[in-house]
Amino acid sequence: MLWFLIALALVVAALILWSAYVSRGVERWIPMDGRQVVVPGARIHVVEMGPADAPAIVMIHGIMSQLRVFTYALAGRLAKDHRVLVMDRPGWGYSTRTGPRLDLAGQADAIAAAIAALGLEKPLLVGHSMGGAVSLALALRHPEAVRGLGLIAPLTQPIDAAPAPLKGLVVPAPLRPIIAWTLAVPLSMRTGKAKTAEVFAPDAVPEDFPIKAGGALAIRPASFQQGCYELEMAPEAIKVQAPRYGEIVLPVAILYGRQDALLDPELHGGKTASAVQHGKVDYLDGGHMLPVTHVDATEAWLRTL
Image 1: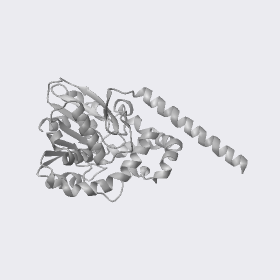
Image 2 (image 1 turned 120 degrees about the horizontal axis):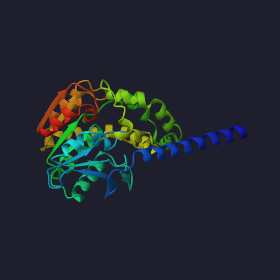
Image 3 (image 1 turned 45 degrees about the horizontal axis):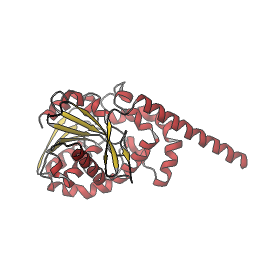
Image 4 (image 1 turned 30 degrees about the vertical axis):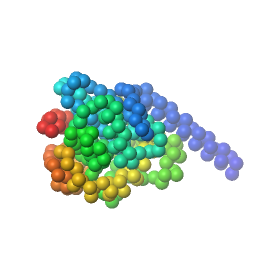
């Protein structure tokens, strides 16, 4: 038994060291691109692009993601004639928490505080996937902060179960730190490519997605723990905010891929567009990662808002 415990301790120590080594390596490949803005509860990593005096657009990403999903191609195009600010949500990328993990309302408050700290005058808020859920929370809590919402494949309605590619994040809270620092990194390296393909389906995953779009940052222990938290937190938070969508008076435009394999386009797109007072939904042929895979169509759609 003693030798077994010694061997187990050595294996655990090796996994922790390996996870730390891989995490540092990923951060060398994908360094911080911008600066941090201090707000209550977080330091928000922001990248600014485009003319400072142009109309502003703020972009926030989804789960297991970060701001490079927008700087991959879309943000640079919009920055030709707009002031574009892409942000890591608290707990993702290089946005760090200074307190407890933030739910949808807490993240909305943090983004609204960052908008105020940056001196932005009613930007268009663009949210992808889970970023769409946070955007709707912001519209309910801080409608004066933005001029409208552009939601790309957003999570907006309660769902009974986690989408298949994300079910590995359904982990009890006490086990998350242990798994994050032992098994999560090697498992992500082994299965990450296949799960990413599931998220993108039916569109192909670009070969440069892991670095240029920041996809590799998702294998870090911190990302695993934040993903587990959001997957547990979001259903109840959505149940609270979804019945209130009729209170939103801001314009809300939604874009969905008809073949989205992660979220139901009609449930999260059509139903929500009908619930808000000034909502509309548009569909195109494609999957969930429209800002990466359908850049031309997504840019054209955003420019109509």
